[in-house]
Length: 178
Image 1 (cartoon, one colour):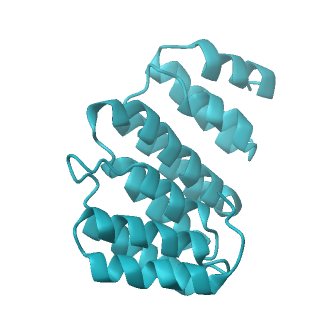
Image 2 (cartoon, rainbow, N blue to C red):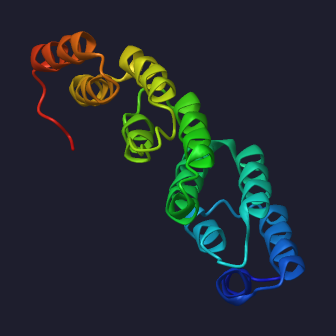
């Protein structure tokens, strides 16, 4: 049986998928629920999109109490790695999964907006707007959600809605977190 230190070393240095998989399997079997350990695995540059999804989904299923953190971390990895190719779909998907677990947390909604490329409309502004509207219903501090909605509506030429959300942001009165 591998120790946590050995698993960490494999996650950090191995480029062999089978070795990484075996170490991951050992960690899950030992019920190691340390998000920091798995973050090392997620940043292993030998893993592709499919492998990251495999590990992340398994981890979220096995340890529901850390699923939000797993999904947020995967979204961040996909945003950084695949964002270079203007492919933010996976990042957006994982921000949505994180929000489904903790709908009152503002970070998934705002971080998803950071993926937006207005030149390519990726992810599509309409999808981001719908996602933000979900957040608007649950997040206690709505000011930042309203500001993002205003910017997105302005970007796609919906000036009346942009103004509507600017007014809503002003009415919210909370100081912005970001």
